[in-house]
Image (cartoon, rainbow, N blue to C red; front, side):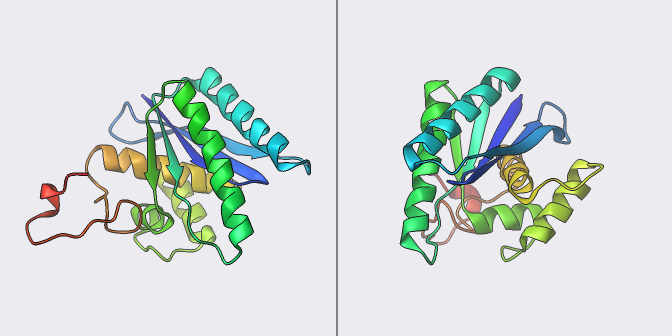
Amino acid sequence: MLILGIDPGSRTTGYGVLDVSTPAPRYVASGCIRLQDVALPQRLARIYAGIAELVSLHGPGEMAIEQVFMAKNPDSALKLGQARGAAIVCAANHGLPVHEYGPRQIKQAVTGSGGATKIQVQHMIVSILGLDGVPQADAADALAIALTHAHARIGLVQRGSFGGHRTRRRGGSWRDYQP
């Protein structure tokens, strides 16, 4: 099965595709959907079309996407949310289950530190996937998102511990958690 990871952005949307049909996830593709300096509705349409093209080309079984985080600039956070929305609607229209992960949760799953830098994420993606070169930062982030979901599918990522699906626990084991 293939997982499509999406790092949404209103200017650049990163994508990464991993094959998780083997015990070790295998790199398939990555890159960026670069959006021209046009009005936001046209950029959102391009995100949708770009993801639709990726779904048609690779045929992923699931999509993983980064959750919205509160940026310093509310306008940027709103545009990021709209870019996410375009990606999520595209996935839903293609029948793909969508899984969301918080930025700290993604960094924790890939680097071991929820406060990792983009350079650290890139380095770990190269190391984990055995890549020959360093992917562009947005593509590396998308691969990290896909890798986080691959780990979550087999129980290596504890949902709720680093952003994303936060819950209050009242004792018991993390295995007792039910969304």
